[in-house]
Length: 373
Image (tube, rainbow, N blue to C red; front, top):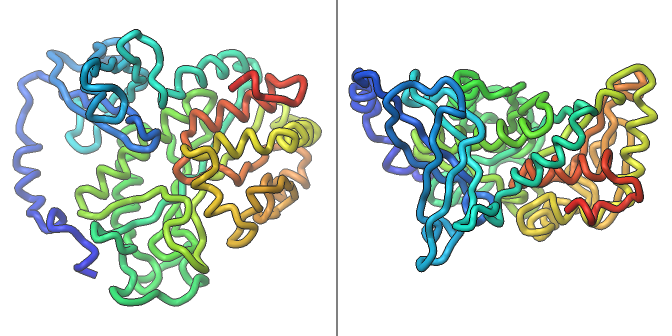
């Protein structure tokens, strides 16, 4: 297994702790986090503030070189970082903070991969519906050599079957990362709901939610940042590739659970069914929004096998993990609750996903969300 691990994982972390425990003389480190021009990558940099910020409003705007993040040309490269959501820093501890930022271009307009800006406008428009989301983030652990963590160096592990929710070194690969990430999320204030080993070996999942409105995207993006930082300490990599291994292996999705206040109340199943009817008429538009490359990543995953629906067809059913939309069995029995959209890819932008769902299910009156996009 050593060949799958980078040299950085063998550095003496006890030395790091010696410096992290030094007093800060009343100063606060604030790490600014943003989404880069790929729409998938995260970037960060840190500055010193003279006092601990009590809210995100206490954190000043900042800037960065967009030509180095696929977001601007070198001749006009300054981009603005607008703090929008603050968390505790689990790596350098209190009073230090992490702050998620929106990115604005030189003209103060949203950067091309800043989907939060338009998502927030939609969420404000539907706030009376108290729209709740829960997103199930699947990911796969790799060594820096590009080989799945824990897999045999010159072959494949046993076929899928014993790995889902598994226990034991022969079945669960990388639990240390998972446990550290979970604690980091709890410390930071992320609304993490749970975690489990997934169907493919070295594949895991964590769930974020319930979150209302824009909070869903904020918490999932920072949870992803924490995952990458934890993996960095272990010298391994977490990928959100929707189909990291070809062949008879499950892909990785970001199943999205959705409910409005009406859906959660008595008789809410009728509102769930109405939403699914609208979704059925906008399948192509949603597929386009469910991965950063307008369906070109998801087409490798949504094949109709390995617990997926076909990318070309829309389907819905109770307790059916091969459908586009799944109504959990207990929701069908109780006639209220939520539905699960199983189409979003693991590398989706949660702002884009939640925005198009809200637009279709709530704002759409003519069963066409094109105007909302």
